[in-house]
Image 1 (spheres, rainbow, N blue to C red):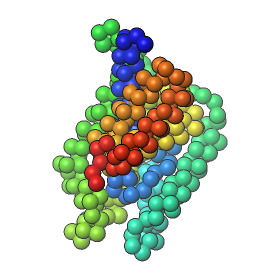
Image 2 (image 1 turned 120 degrees about the vertical axis):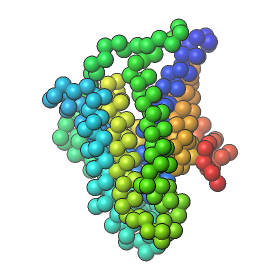
Image 3 (image 1 turned 60 degrees about the vertical axis):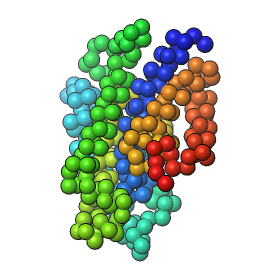
Image 4 (image 1 turned 90 degrees about the horizontal axis):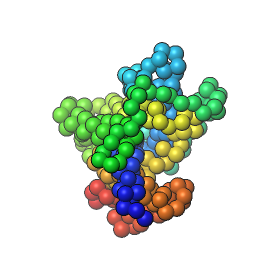
Length: 294
């Protein structure tokens, strides 16, 4: 194998992996605080991509500008889903600890409803959201890079840095961290745990809303587009370390680079299978994930 092709594959893997990590950030945040696997995570990504599509179709907005609408809309939707659908399940549990399987089934139901409503409303046609950016490639030495992937990679890292800073410097961020460490202790300290849960879920959906707008210019849009990203996000979160912001990015980079290089030797679907094998091996060796703590 030519070294140029391997290096080029690794660079593309870094770009794709960073976006995997960016998509997984919201899932990791929700799981780290609520201990709930949001199976509808990919559905929220799909909805934000449709927001970008319709804003471009009706108003001519660039998909990147549509994040100004998609982020607050997805925050409100996530907040509402947590407050009206998931919160009653938490309150029903006497120990205020949700059984993983019941929460998984609940969010799986949300995924089925959202995806099928999208199919009914928008149809199964494949759509695209063109950007106004005309220069579609950038050069890094001898390597041409897709401009949209570069924007997605840089934005993912910026979102992770902003989230980390917000969690460390704001009152709500500190309340979220305290609740993630010890919910009962946070409640005894006067923190409104229910409000923290709602905000955390909304924030996780807002992040994936931003990522949907970043993916829209180069990912074909259908009502089922979110499923594969949702599954990939779960792998990235567990691989990087549940609840770890840095772990999400590291896990995404590992999966992205591994799949990109493996695709040079085998077909792309087979490369995805190998990434699952890598996921299993790492969990056997390091169950807490690459950046997780015991």
